[in-house]
Every structure is written in structure tokens, then in C-alpha cells.
Length: 408
Image (cartoon, rainbow, N blue to C red; front, side, top):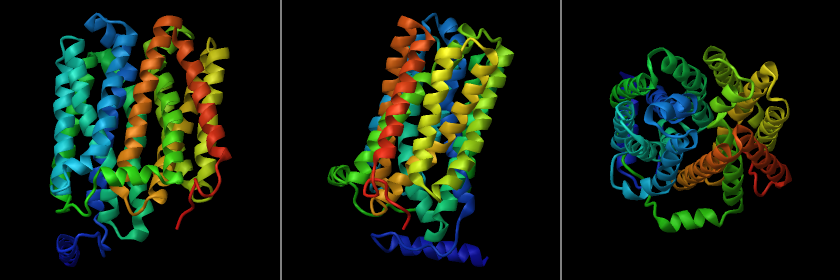
């Protein structure tokens, strides 16, 4: 009873002020509900990577064209991320989050029933709205659900949803797609969205908007060196990752010529590697943010090099994909920590810019990767991925303290 009264008092304090207040009690159930939302959205986002071949075959399109389902989500997400806080500035934040989860459900149902590329792209556009909006506000919401000293723990819980989705989405999607068809995998994503929406409706308290986000605040963020460098690093790293990862299944089918069961295990290894990479990244960030982001990007560049030069080996390909998963698991928490430290006073605006950079990078990586795959085969995408990752690592390691802020 005392916990409920404390939470209610905190809500009233927020409602009575234009500025955030220190919450006395941590609302962990609400934080977990954000993690569930991230899990559902990332699962839906990653499904095309593990189902690209059967989707393309069923809809009668090329692998490169099917890969643009990733592009559609990224482009719309890039637009939704910075504008969500502005367009919804007068709406209770819990209602906004519920809407994004509802869009996840609608998108998954549309994808599961798609009869052609156009319907599939519409489904992914809807997902892009949900993904961009949810990601841009998740960090700021977590800041309001727990006392400030518990913020790192809350962010870690939210990002656990990414790690679990990384572990589950690709291998489970490939397995379900082979067993019951790719449409069933998207139907399962819709079911995850329904469960998430119920949990969010039961746990997230009233969170009236605070501050007055606008275009001016976005422009101000871009003038901060630490923010602009974070966005540039994100563009390089995310474009490199998604140029390669989007087309990992065609690569595994064509170069080492793995069967579907083995591909599922390799993708599972990628996901498990990402889970432990997330844990290791959280440990490393406490000591050096630069080491976390730079090392992760450098490791993916090395994995891409192995795939390009020695990809015909089943064991080396599996090992490189696993290393890729571990290294990528280190990066989202590091990039989010970078942007939060760089702009703690404008969390929603800075978060929106980070998501925009990420989605633009995903779109660019998927488009360029698709052109390379259709023109030169999967190896072309991995050459670009390794080059972009190496550039991102060199950028991060060359930055000083002004661009990579420390905690506190």
C-alpha cells in the first residue's frame, strides 16, 4: 500500500510541474513493460533478416527487393523518432506508448497476411512509426520511472529486451518459418504485441508530458560536439551492421552452403553472442565508453573480414557470425549511454536524434547492401559492412573527452 501511495504522490508532483521531479519509488513493473515493448519491436524488425529467402520466394521478388522491407521501416522510423515528442507534446506519455504497441500489432498482422510487396511495405511503414517513436521516448520514460541513482539499472533492463530479441528473433524466426511458414512468425510477433500491451496498460502510470520539445531544441542538440559525434558514429556503425546482417541468411546459404537447420543454429549463436555482448558492454561502459563502442565496431570489422576471405568454411563462418553478434550486443547500450550523458537535460530530443541516425543508417545500409547483393552477391555487402565498421571504430578511438563525456 505504501508503494502505491508513493507512486501516486510522484505522479501528482509531476502533473503539478512543468519539470521532471525525483521519483521516490522505482516502478520496476513499468520499466519491465518498456523492455517487453522493445523486445516485441526489435523482434518484428529483425524477422526479415532470417526470413528473407522464403518471403522473396513466396511474393515472387528478389532478395534485394525483399530486403527493402527493412529499408521502409528504417526510413519511417527516422522521421518518426525526432517528431514524436513534438507531435505528442500535449499527450500523456503512457497513452503514446500504448499506441506504439498497438501499431506493432497492426503491422505484424498486415505482414502475416501480405499478398505482395506493396502490402508488406505498408506493414513495415507502420512498424517504422512504432519503432521510431518508442525508441525515441523509452530512455526518457525510464528516467521518470525510477530515482536518478537507479537510472543505469533501468536502462539495462530496457535493453535486455533488445538482447533477448536478438537471441530469439533470427533463429526462432528461421525455425518457425521453415516449420510453419514465414507468415506464422509474423503472427507470433502480433501475439507478443498483445501481451505487451496488456502489461503496459496495467503497469505504466500517468506520465503527463514535461517541457516543450520543438525544432529549436533539436537544432540546439546538433550544435553540441558530443551529440554530433555520437550521431556520426551511429551512422557509420549501424549502416555497416545492417548492410551485412540483413543479408546474412543468403550469405550462409550461398557461400558455406549451410542447410536451414544449421543456419538456425548459427543465428541462435549470433543472438546468444549478442546477449553476452550486452552484459559485457554494460561492464565495460563503467570503465570506458570509448573502449566499449570502439572495440565492438572493430570486432565486427574483423568478423566481416573473416566472412569475406574465409567464408566458405562452415566453422569459420559460424564463428565470425557469433563474434559479430557478441560485438553488436556491446553497441546499443554504449551509444544510448553516450547520448544520455551528452544531453541529460534534453533526453527526448536527443533520444529522437539518435534513433533518427540509427534508422537512416539502417535504411542506407539495407539499400546499399541490397544493391551490392543483387550486383555482386552477399560478399559485396560484407565488404561494405567491414569498411564502415572500421571507419566507425577509428572515429571513436580518435575522439577526446569533450566528444565522449564521462558519467556524472
